[in-house]
Amino acid sequence: MDVKLFALTAALTMAIYAPQTHAKPISLAERCSCRSTVNNVPRSFIRELKFIHTPNCPFQVIAKLKTNRELCINPEARWLQQYLKNALTKMKKAKQII
Image 1 (spheres, rainbow, N blue to C red):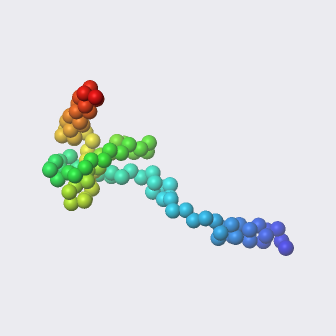
Image 2: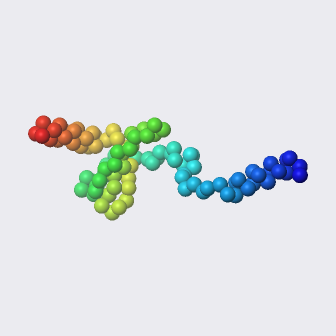
Image 3: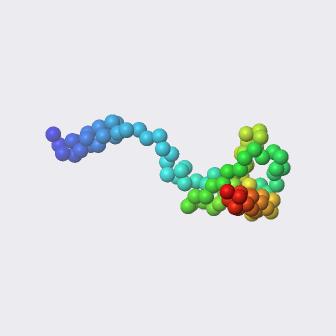
């Protein structure tokens, strides 16, 4: 049997029987969640805030609304900065009480 034909057969056999992975391709895994952001969202519509920081993307804030829709919030929005400042103050006070 020819060596090239044997090598080709072995490579095809390995490709067919290789375990399947369910991971995303690298190009999809490294994409940022937020491509555009909004500044103003009525705070009464927000159910939860999610903060994401990855090596390839800047700091991202994702707001899940009561309608289960997700929006990316501008992390430099004035109301968000005030919200974070208030949250940190509350956490510091809670730690002092304990």
